[in-house]
Image 1: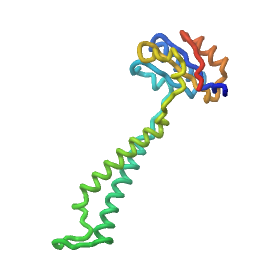
Image 2: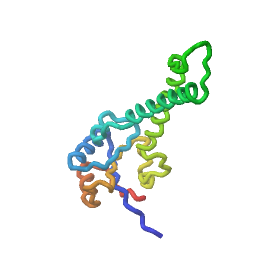
Image 3: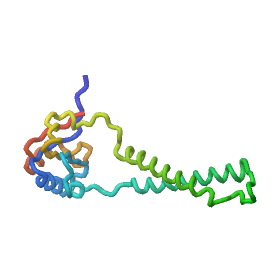
Image 4: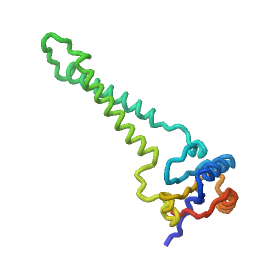
Length: 178
């Protein structure tokens, strides 16, 4: 039987104000790998944790461009080179007739890129997150606020992190084990 690997430290706070202050102070102390869990959205928490802009909009743009170019290219290949049929004297390369298919494949490419990009950047699917192993974490859906500092953080040392979050006013501190 193997010993569980330490994934981080989970600290419980009673109010959202305390959680935001703790996240700001942890960020100021140099901790960069942390996350917060709340029963409802807390305004200003993402900024306190130091979240940065996401790359999903760029992935959506690239997916849309690839979808549109793919749709247009498919129609050019089919109607101009593979099976050219001159109907009613129109040119083989009839851009107005291809706008709808090009537009629809642009939307399809952007949507697929959005879903796959979001899943990849969030490292999903993750059927079991290590914080679910902490029994008290079940209260995160009702009325408690939690701050987790991950062991992957460069400044992480177990005893120092426990002391640090206790000094921040944490009601409880638990080890997160995988």
